[in-house]
Image (cartoon, rainbow, N blue to C red; front, side, top):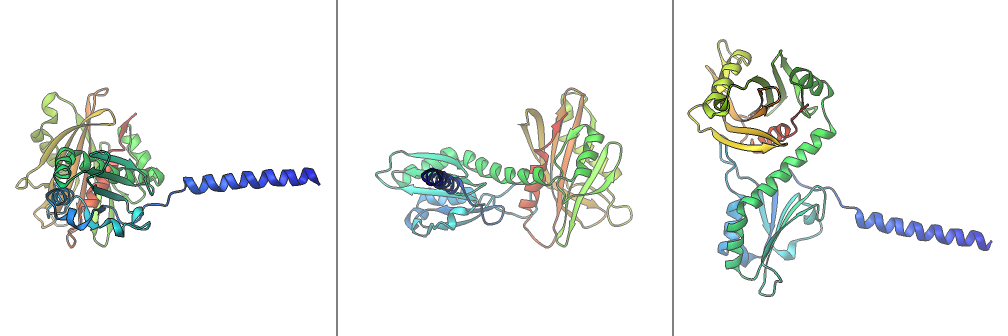
Amino acid sequence: MRYSKYVLLIMVVIAGYACKDKKSSHKPNVGGKAGEMLVVMDDKIKTSPGGVELQNLLRETYLGLPQEEPHFKMSVAPHRSFTNFMKTIRNVVVVTVKSNVKEDAVKYYKDRWARPQAVVGITAKDTATLKRLVDEHQLKILSFFNKAERDRFIASYKKYPSDELVKRVDSTFSVRLNVPTSLNNKKSLDSFIWMQEDADWGFQGMFVYEFPYVGDGTFSKEYLLNKRDSILNKNVPGPSAGSFMTTEHHFPVIYKKASINNKEVVELRGLWKVQNDMMGGPFILQAHHDKKNNRVVITDGFVYSPEKPDKRDKIRQMEALMYTLNFK
């Protein structure tokens, strides 16, 4: 009897610790929609130059879209309203301005109150210091939250891949691309694949194609756009006779070099149109340099949503898919 009571006591203690550990380690899933942002700062800080500058930063125009859209759909709440429910929002900036703060700083946190969450904490002794911190960290703040949005999409693609399209891209181009189940095979050729999701709001999709690397000029804006227009003209017909997809050259195309997955990449953002028709929308293209095989692999994402201006998150989804590309 004494032995059984001892065993029971040990089991209760172990169960208690297990429950305590589980409770302390558990964090809820983030709430809200992609692109939503909460800024926590009191009213008088909100109207100060630093507070205004922070709001303007987060509302900066997202480049490469036909209509202006901000980087984030932002709301502001004072500290007194920052409830546990609000702590589950996916993107949060907490601004604390007090004369007795220990450190003037901008700090970055992942999964602070929920998962997968991105939180930036800004502490400053006065509003002038707040403005200085926002000025100094503006690029890093935007990059931190944009990456968090992208990583959430990537995690979803890895969790729910389209086995058929992943294999098709692999067999055609010898690359791994975590194509999600939302995309369907529209056209597959020896060196061109067209994947697309059709919806009541329009469609979004991606082309994957390749061509030889012929020297430094291969990655110039002009060369890439000429190749794009030539390949889309041949492979992407429009809805009416004689129509085809091409680049809208009357809209500026944004050109950027980057390193993604340890590979040199050139990125283009701009607008596409259907020649001899009225269709159009934004596109994002990444040119991936495969030095081993002396070639360029293109991932070219596009969105068509004529009735609604919210194209930002749909382009973000296509951009996130591009970040999953890896050469084998």
